[in-house]
Length: 373
Image 1 (cartoon, rainbow, N blue to C red):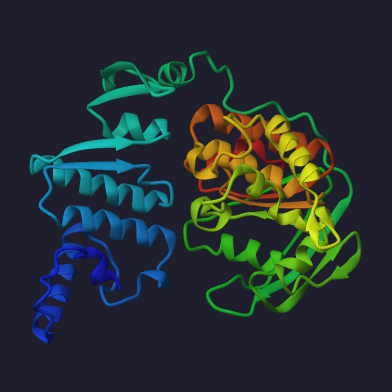
Image 2 (cartoon, rainbow, N blue to C red; image 1 turned 90 degrees about the vertical axis):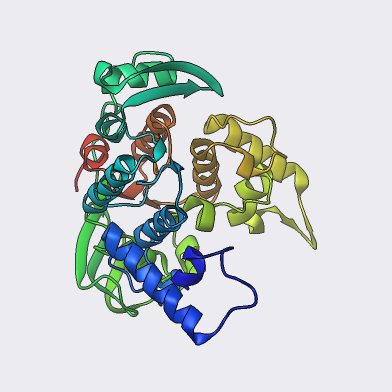
């Protein structure tokens, strides 16, 4: 539960009575009240949302009377309100004399919260300057080593006929989506906006069959389909990039080859064996067409950057020849250079006639890349 996560490694082995549990609960509650985190300390971590888990992690770090706090992409799963709350916590710690290293790809946050900014590229130090002397464009220039005229590729595609209709879709299990209806056109990038907790992810999971629905229907080219499971969704031409890449997207101990072909494994069956030659050929295609930066196809995927991991996942799904791609926060935790490449890939897929539903917490991203929201 949350208390165990907060006090991990600091619980005396020989003292585990009721009084200690009550003290842990009260101490955790006091930390949460100090940081204005509205979560019950007795709840299991697995029952919390991504953003709530992120805040508990921050509370755990703060609880240890720290002198230096390193935050690596702390707002990747937080809504604007929660980001503002985190910044209040950071200012409190700063007043207490705590030094803070804040790692982020979000330029606005970096300029808002920092006194000094250090830029790195390919493992090397590039520059350190006072935040007041920097702009977003200057930081991006230092990060990618070139000027980026536009944050988003130009829109060159005109959406076509209606390919999918969702009517009155309601999830079986709460919390879920309720009475949702919309249309998706061929070659269209449809954005889904909303605050954390607005059930954007639950909507995609219901469409993809990992969450059952009690009401409503999904039509593909005028024909009603049933995505009772993700296997059904795959057969019906759906693919899904999940929100938490490291937890539910990649097989971290597996190679790039394994991660590339796993969703399409039936295509490589040859009697009781797998056709290694075809698997290697398709992995080479993923690496070259997705522009994955890697030493080789046998490299473990966990050793790649977030952007390159995401490219492998996109390539994995394209091998299944999907009609519709469901993308949940496809650029979360990815640097500005890799983001632009992901945007280009999404635009290219739309131009090929794929229908794309894209969830994002960044409104500027939705405005920049989507046809409708």
